[in-house]
View 1 (cartoon, rainbow, N blue to C red):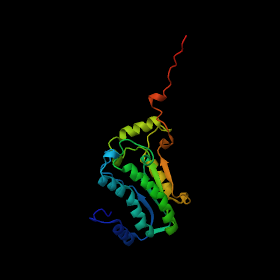
View 2: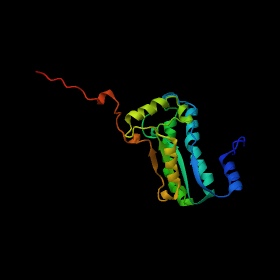
View 3: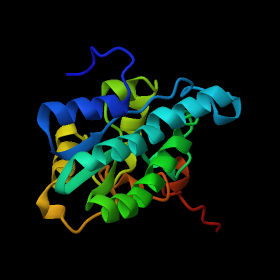
View 4: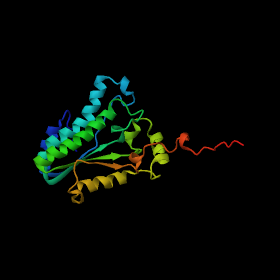
Length: 210
Protein backbone atom coordinates (compact mmCIF):
# COMPACT_ATOMS: atom_id res chain seq x y z
CA UNK A 1 0.00 0.00 0.00
CA UNK A 2 2.83 2.40 0.83
CA UNK A 3 5.41 1.26 -1.72
CA UNK A 4 4.79 4.36 -3.85
CA UNK A 5 6.32 6.53 -1.11
CA UNK A 6 9.82 7.08 -2.49
CA UNK A 7 12.52 7.18 0.17
CA UNK A 8 10.14 6.45 3.03
CA UNK A 9 11.35 5.41 6.47
CA UNK A 10 9.81 2.97 8.93
CA UNK A 11 8.88 5.84 11.23
CA UNK A 12 7.13 7.66 8.38
CA UNK A 13 5.16 4.57 7.38
CA UNK A 14 4.18 3.98 11.02
CA UNK A 15 2.94 7.56 11.28
CA UNK A 16 0.92 7.20 8.08
CA UNK A 17 -0.59 3.89 9.19
CA UNK A 18 -1.60 5.44 12.49
CA UNK A 19 -3.27 8.25 10.56
CA UNK A 20 -5.04 5.81 8.19
CA UNK A 21 -6.03 3.03 10.60
CA UNK A 22 -5.28 4.02 14.17
CA UNK A 23 -4.24 1.10 16.36
CA UNK A 24 -3.05 -2.24 14.93
CA UNK A 25 -2.94 -5.79 16.30
CA UNK A 26 0.00 -7.59 14.71
CA UNK A 27 3.41 -7.10 13.13
CA UNK A 28 4.71 -9.61 10.56
CA UNK A 29 8.34 -9.13 9.53
CA UNK A 30 9.37 -11.16 6.48
CA UNK A 31 12.14 -8.96 5.14
CA UNK A 32 15.62 -10.32 4.42
CA UNK A 33 18.33 -9.24 2.02
CA UNK A 34 21.95 -10.23 1.68
CA UNK A 35 23.58 -8.70 -1.40
CA UNK A 36 26.52 -11.11 -1.09
CA UNK A 37 24.57 -14.17 0.09
CA UNK A 38 26.28 -16.40 -2.50
CA UNK A 39 29.74 -15.50 -1.19
CA UNK A 40 31.43 -17.50 1.58
CA UNK A 41 31.69 -15.58 4.84
CA UNK A 42 35.47 -15.29 4.44
CA UNK A 43 34.94 -13.52 1.10
CA UNK A 44 32.14 -11.23 2.28
CA UNK A 45 32.92 -7.53 2.34
CA UNK A 46 32.27 -5.38 5.38
CA UNK A 47 29.67 -3.48 3.37
CA UNK A 48 27.88 -6.67 2.32
CA UNK A 49 27.94 -8.04 5.85
CA UNK A 50 26.52 -4.88 7.39
CA UNK A 51 23.89 -4.63 4.63
CA UNK A 52 22.66 -8.14 5.45
CA UNK A 53 22.57 -7.31 9.15
CA UNK A 54 20.72 -4.04 8.59
CA UNK A 55 18.07 -5.38 6.21
CA UNK A 56 17.53 -8.76 7.84
CA UNK A 57 17.85 -8.03 11.57
CA UNK A 58 17.82 -4.34 12.48
CA UNK A 59 14.75 -3.77 10.31
CA UNK A 60 12.76 -5.88 12.78
CA UNK A 61 14.07 -3.89 15.74
CA UNK A 62 13.05 -0.72 13.92
CA UNK A 63 9.56 -2.06 13.18
CA UNK A 64 8.94 -2.98 16.81
CA UNK A 65 10.33 0.38 17.94
CA UNK A 66 7.99 2.44 15.77
CA UNK A 67 4.93 0.18 15.56
CA UNK A 68 4.98 -0.90 19.21
CA UNK A 69 3.30 2.32 20.39
CA UNK A 70 0.50 1.74 17.84
CA UNK A 71 -0.34 -1.77 19.04
CA UNK A 72 -3.60 -2.68 20.68
CA UNK A 73 -3.46 -4.46 24.03
CA UNK A 74 -2.16 -8.04 23.72
CA UNK A 75 -0.57 -7.33 20.34
CA UNK A 76 2.00 -9.68 18.80
CA UNK A 77 4.96 -9.51 16.43
CA UNK A 78 6.67 -12.32 14.52
CA UNK A 79 9.62 -12.66 12.18
CA UNK A 80 11.01 -15.38 9.93
CA UNK A 81 14.40 -16.90 10.60
CA UNK A 82 16.37 -19.94 9.41
CA UNK A 83 18.40 -22.81 10.86
CA UNK A 84 21.65 -21.26 9.57
CA UNK A 85 21.44 -19.02 12.63
CA UNK A 86 22.78 -21.91 14.71
CA UNK A 87 24.17 -24.47 12.24
CA UNK A 88 26.68 -24.11 9.44
CA UNK A 89 24.87 -24.18 6.07
CA UNK A 90 27.46 -24.01 3.26
CA UNK A 91 26.28 -21.68 0.53
CA UNK A 92 24.21 -19.47 2.84
CA UNK A 93 26.80 -16.76 3.09
CA UNK A 94 27.27 -13.03 2.83
CA UNK A 95 26.66 -12.57 6.55
CA UNK A 96 23.10 -13.91 6.34
CA UNK A 97 23.74 -16.62 8.93
CA UNK A 98 25.01 -13.92 11.29
CA UNK A 99 21.96 -11.76 10.55
CA UNK A 100 19.58 -14.61 11.37
CA UNK A 101 21.44 -15.29 14.62
CA UNK A 102 21.12 -11.61 15.51
CA UNK A 103 17.42 -11.67 14.60
CA UNK A 104 16.75 -14.56 16.99
CA UNK A 105 18.72 -12.89 19.77
CA UNK A 106 16.84 -9.65 19.17
CA UNK A 107 13.57 -11.58 19.33
CA UNK A 108 14.34 -12.63 22.89
CA UNK A 109 15.49 -9.16 23.95
CA UNK A 110 12.49 -7.48 22.33
CA UNK A 111 10.16 -9.97 24.01
CA UNK A 112 11.43 -8.59 27.31
CA UNK A 113 11.57 -4.91 26.40
CA UNK A 114 8.39 -4.65 24.30
CA UNK A 115 6.57 -6.97 26.67
CA UNK A 116 7.24 -4.72 29.62
CA UNK A 117 6.72 -1.50 27.68
CA UNK A 118 3.60 -2.29 25.63
CA UNK A 119 2.49 -5.80 26.62
CA UNK A 120 3.62 -6.96 23.18
CA UNK A 121 4.53 -10.59 22.47
CA UNK A 122 7.52 -11.18 20.16
CA UNK A 123 8.33 -14.53 18.54
CA UNK A 124 10.18 -16.03 15.57
CA UNK A 125 9.41 -18.84 13.12
CA UNK A 126 12.35 -20.86 11.84
CA UNK A 127 11.03 -22.23 8.56
CA UNK A 128 12.55 -25.14 6.70
CA UNK A 129 13.46 -25.39 3.03
CA UNK A 130 10.64 -23.97 0.93
CA UNK A 131 10.68 -23.17 -2.78
CA UNK A 132 9.67 -19.54 -2.36
CA UNK A 133 10.81 -16.72 -4.64
CA UNK A 134 13.08 -15.36 -1.91
CA UNK A 135 14.62 -18.78 -1.23
CA UNK A 136 15.32 -19.33 -4.93
CA UNK A 137 17.58 -16.26 -4.87
CA UNK A 138 20.07 -18.25 -2.79
CA UNK A 139 20.62 -20.56 -5.75
CA UNK A 140 20.53 -24.04 -4.19
CA UNK A 141 17.07 -24.28 -2.66
CA UNK A 142 16.21 -27.33 -4.78
CA UNK A 143 19.13 -29.23 -3.25
CA UNK A 144 18.10 -28.13 0.25
CA UNK A 145 14.53 -29.34 -0.30
CA UNK A 146 15.82 -32.71 -1.47
CA UNK A 147 18.21 -32.87 1.50
CA UNK A 148 15.27 -32.26 3.83
CA UNK A 149 13.25 -34.98 2.11
CA UNK A 150 16.05 -37.44 2.78
CA UNK A 151 16.96 -36.40 6.32
CA UNK A 152 14.01 -34.79 8.13
CA UNK A 153 11.82 -36.96 10.41
CA UNK A 154 8.78 -36.10 8.27
CA UNK A 155 9.50 -36.93 4.64
CA UNK A 156 7.12 -34.55 2.91
CA UNK A 157 7.07 -31.17 1.24
CA UNK A 158 6.90 -28.17 3.54
CA UNK A 159 4.16 -25.77 2.43
CA UNK A 160 3.63 -22.06 2.82
CA UNK A 161 0.25 -22.88 4.34
CA UNK A 162 1.91 -24.79 7.18
CA UNK A 163 4.15 -21.85 7.96
CA UNK A 164 1.16 -19.53 7.73
CA UNK A 165 -0.83 -21.62 10.20
CA UNK A 166 2.07 -21.51 12.66
CA UNK A 167 2.20 -17.74 12.26
CA UNK A 168 -1.55 -17.48 12.79
CA UNK A 169 -1.19 -19.44 16.02
CA UNK A 170 1.64 -17.29 17.38
CA UNK A 171 -0.26 -14.11 16.55
CA UNK A 172 -3.54 -15.32 18.04
CA UNK A 173 -4.90 -15.32 21.61
CA UNK A 174 -4.23 -19.08 21.64
CA UNK A 175 -0.55 -18.17 22.15
CA UNK A 176 -1.21 -15.44 24.72
CA UNK A 177 1.43 -16.80 27.13
CA UNK A 178 4.08 -17.49 24.49
CA UNK A 179 6.80 -14.91 23.85
CA UNK A 180 10.52 -14.89 23.14
CA UNK A 181 10.51 -18.25 21.37
CA UNK A 182 11.76 -19.54 18.04
CA UNK A 183 9.21 -22.02 16.68
CA UNK A 184 10.62 -24.51 14.19
CA UNK A 185 8.35 -25.30 11.25
CA UNK A 186 10.63 -27.58 9.25
CA UNK A 187 9.30 -31.15 9.37
CA UNK A 188 11.67 -31.73 12.29
CA UNK A 189 14.88 -30.99 10.37
CA UNK A 190 16.30 -28.95 13.27
CA UNK A 191 16.23 -32.02 15.53
CA UNK A 192 18.67 -34.01 13.42
CA UNK A 193 22.33 -34.27 14.35
CA UNK A 194 23.52 -36.32 11.39
CA UNK A 195 22.61 -36.71 7.72
CA UNK A 196 20.90 -40.08 7.55
CA UNK A 197 21.39 -40.25 3.78
CA UNK A 198 25.17 -40.25 4.27
CA UNK A 199 26.89 -43.34 2.81
CA UNK A 200 28.81 -43.58 6.09
CA UNK A 201 25.57 -44.47 7.90
CA UNK A 202 24.48 -47.21 5.52
CA UNK A 203 24.76 -50.75 6.90
CA UNK A 204 28.06 -52.29 5.95
CA UNK A 205 28.52 -55.96 5.18
CA UNK A 206 30.91 -57.52 7.65
CA UNK A 207 33.70 -59.71 6.37
CA UNK A 208 33.83 -63.00 8.22
CA UNK A 209 37.18 -64.74 8.30
CA UNK A 210 37.17 -68.53 8.17
